[in-house]
Image (cartoon, rainbow, N blue to C red):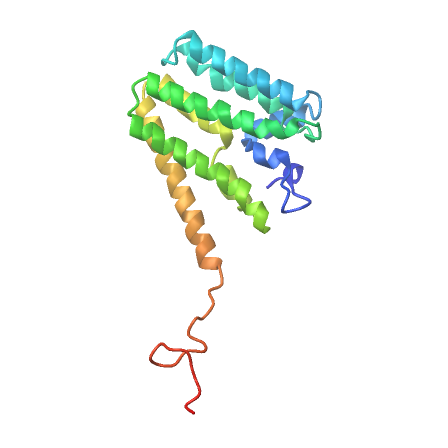
Amino acid sequence: MSAAVRETDPRRPDLRFLRDDSHIGNLLGRLVPGAFPPLLTVLTGALVVSVLLLADQGRLTGITLCAPVASLLLSGLTSGHPHDGRFDWLVPPVLRLSEYGFLAVLGLASGVPGPLVFVLLVAVVLHHRDDAARPAVGMVRPGWVRAAALGWDGRMLVVAAGGALESLTAAYGLLAAYLVALLVRESVRTWSATPVTDVRDGHNDRGGVDASST
């Protein structure tokens, strides 16, 4: 995790951490740190994505594939902002809705099998849940794992690139498989590193609790 999103209190993660920006988004934020209000800019990006999707009813067209680029250029500019405004806590949910909406509408309207769209969305939701839930118990995922998940903007760009190459279904399938494998690997690593209490202590050979023979 970069210094820009390091947490001061593990139970209260920095909103910039919950944004889940890619390296590209973080780079844009460093170019103009604090220059734009996060919530207004992110809402504008979400509106642009919605308009571009509605323009062709969510189907795969050149206009639709521009949505991730437009969202990245707008929302990425605010990734370096301290997010200390009264309503800036709404920024991560707005980014989530933009990503989920883009993946769902584009996939379903362009003929990607529904189950495949569902699997990809579940994988992305679990990724976000992991980032939100772990700080509550004083943990965060390794920085390289979060970076490997590509960020909200990176995942949208991967899907858009697949569409541009006329391989949208393959892009959904490969991205879903990649994210699921990453989640499983991190889950196994976490479980393996968790201490296990020896439940055999205080029990006799027959499985009962030791008791006095008198």
